[in-house]
Length: 298
Ligand code: SF4
Image (tube, protein in one colour):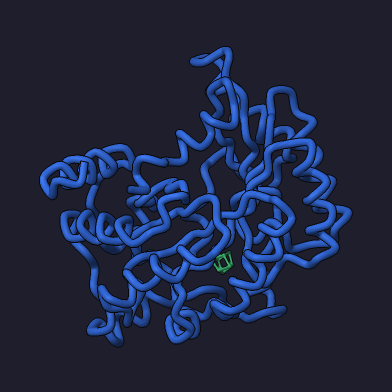
């Protein structure tokens, strides 16, 4: 089962030392907010929620790495780092300026690789050519926000791309030998348990390395919060225990070669409307392991 091939193990296979991701906000914008793909962004998105304090966009990549690394290097002097370009769409920009930022991160002492989070409709071949070169000399993982494999859902949440576009970009990326990951949100409005579990079957056919899951979180000041007020019946907020079973069922259907990076995400409490489980990522993983034992799967 995929939990045995967790992301931590994947990194351990790649590196003979401990590595830590450092989140970077490189000041990119998003084509689904500025009108290129859409306006207003994805209905669930309030970008404040996935950018740690130190990733403030007025700071340079070097400055952000310096601050992030200072925190970890005191505790673990031997540790190395992966620069995680996380906020907004980190391949949205002119190729030269994107490369300048990636290379700035790779030049920082102790940085051994990059993870670049982006949208599937934002990866031109010209940039992939350059990323392929980076991949030959450094660790590189491109993480695509796919969110759902159902085009009706993608439309409802205003993603601005289809699942077919995601498949095409994932294939183009993986064909170049670049590690390719996806991010999915489990529990989007209108999706039944069966729809959610069908995502596992569908993505299992793709040439992926990693999968990151998280529960639907309703965040203040988002379009989705407004939709929820108008149509609460299309939403189902899972309890933590329900979500544990959902994740296990999902894993059972998932290609066992994929490394599963996480199951949950925690938005800042002051922005979160629901569900408020109060569980940290590692606490949730423990709950999954406990439940798998109960279900005789571990
Ligand atoms: S979730 Fe990502 S793609 Fe969607 S609006 Fe927010 S930054 Fe843009």
